[in-house]
Image (cartoon, rainbow over all chains, first blue to last red; front, side, top):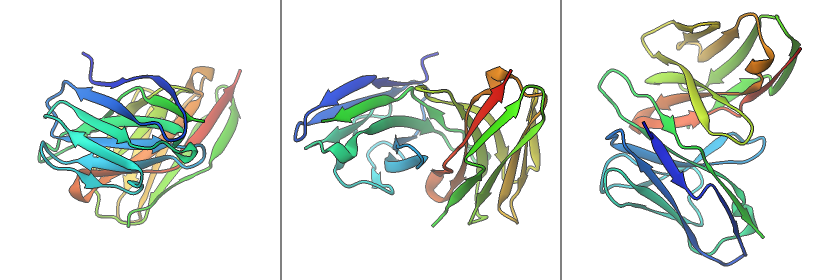
Length: 114
Length: 111
């Protein structure tokens, strides 16, 4: 089972360049998330999508945009990359069953902005 | 705003020791609490999930407890092994199916 798949795994950008991080899940989950992880700061929520067609800002949305393309895919776009966006990005998905919800994570994208 | 804190930030123990990792959260209105393991340069692997109505969950040498009213959870690792070396993260699921993470505890188990 693939679970949550992120591409690319590594990326180096120059300041001002744009790029899109891709995420897809095959578990038929409604909710999807984008997090960034920085040393000593844990994971911080950038954006999330509770269901297809909806997106909401998380804790650190500035400089990012997202698209919930369909139920499977949730992309994160950096329009004009800045060195402060150097981080490891994780996509996750979950499903609320009425009794429980468990989150599953991709392997991460390590982004460096120079 | 929900805040999650993990103590200690780093821990080094000799092989074979039993150890406890701590997680606290400020808002007790949670759906569940998850403990994750993260190896260097890797993603997150879910270890245990405790629903808000439960007090503890066990998986092998791992035991996680939850005291929702006091906003605390512990992860107990019995008979630690060098292969347990990793960063351990706790996260709570709360309103809107949101996950909020603690900063993690970096564990080193020395042979």
